[in-house]
Image 1: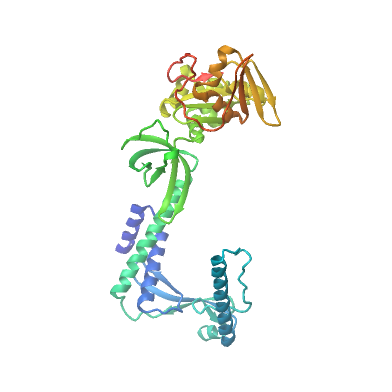
Image 2: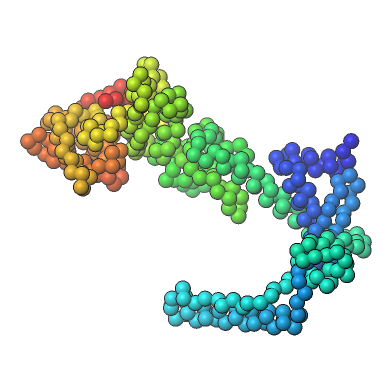
Length: 420
């Protein structure tokens, strides 16, 4: 039967989700710090072994055997290194004061032996402790324990073990969520701090920054939301998870979740252009002649695309067919407008798209949204030209949009995807 100490350690492991070895290492580090506080000195490299069965501790001074050196020479070299370091710091400070370039200032290293009395022991001294010692050996010299630890040492041990356990817990959480980078997770709105929203993901809260939020969405305490994990990092304060609902990748992952052909590779999502909360254009293709990529994305009676639109809060989605031919791709990208012809200038990667007068407003879109998204999607600068009349250039820069649909009075059913 495990001892009470081991049972307590395993209970901590279960509550914190930590490995048993991590907790033992934290305890041994704390005991080492306590020993140094009461009984050690600065030239001891203390390591401890903790026995969970008996609660006893063994303390060792760990040294690496190095060749014999002249102490006078070592002292001289150390003084020279210190002098050069001080000179280097002084030159750097003077250069900064004069606003001179510091790139050319280098620290000249002093060649010669190095000896650290805390971690090293000379061969002659090592042979006194163990006659068979050789250069490179590691000696573990057991140290006496004169008595019990004092109050200050106990407080030091408590601080060390708390810090080590906190660091171990942070690392476990970081490793757990790092695997979800680039994926979608379900979360709950926890609270709002200024323009930033914190989303509870289970063991940690993720950050939904203002630029990663959809402008038309309002997040209320307790709301369940899907979020895209943009980045998982480890900071001094612990793991930091950056989330997004406004990125193109979020739309792509929703398609892969809701459309089996997309997740299996039968349908490929080539490009996405998005104005969050308003409208998205998604270019799809397939290498399987038996699969209709647009039909697969829409689903029977629009059930698949409707699920995605609902998750995006009613954001309109245009599904178009991707093409290797730029002219054909640009024509598809301007859907639902019908294109008369496309003139390409490959050197400038620009295109003039000719449309009939009745298709002009549909091609441009309200506030230029349709042509703007088509430009983002294809990567070509698009100019809309009315046959025998007006010329309108597409804009790559973000612009506010007044409505979700073109201004020609054509209305489409709410939540229904437009396809080419």
